[in-house]
Image (cartoon, rainbow, N blue to C red; front, side, top):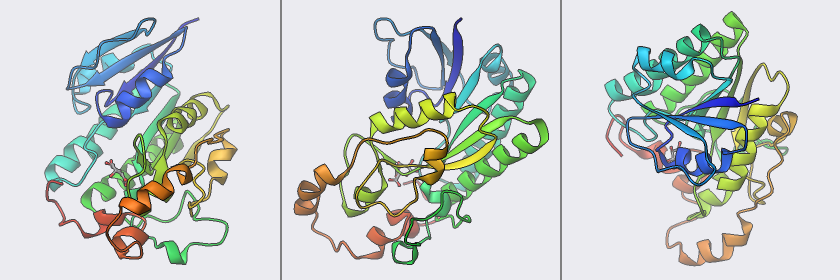
Length: 271
Ligand code: 15L
């Protein structure tokens, strides 16, 4: 039997890295984005929906007959409030409504570490900061991710949808500064994480960190383990190179606050 997974934001940074890694035999990826996706790799089964997540009709069409939704769409940095509100908050509501109408049982929502950006490394408990720590957003972008999580919780409680919110750290090919040595999510672990979200039996509503097994991490991997996420990569292999090339103060707040530089970016300004 073929399964269909909707991936919003499929042409964005995380979307492009995950898309190829989530391709499987017997799986169709329905790619949603306003930007054209890369052409499919050999053997990759894709359908393309060129639309914004704020487009109700298009999201209904995207969710029709789908088994799950991976929602990566929206703005991924600080931006003016009206843009954040429309794309991230309303876009997520529109998508969840469409998923409910289409009876899609499982949704994975890309939240962000910036929902909790004002937590401090030095104040974290010894066994790591819990994935569901209370919101401490660092930007309007971070506020929108808190709202994304709240919408996910609402749709779980009201309609019984399985919703997993991922507080993603820094999902890039490699870490680049002291902070990213603890926030890094390798692309391969990212794929393991999304796969765990898609395959764990009846997750209910959950909040999970999106990080690798970094030696320097101070966020607890427990919630991830509970859904079968077992990261294999560790940023430590890059630590020497990263620290040798870093000319700032590794103990400055931009490096020790969870949200890093986002904690100081002017609110509502394009980053
Ligand atoms: C995010 O949420 C952003 O989307 C991404 O661009 C990075 O800045 C990342 O967080 C991070 O904190 O490194």
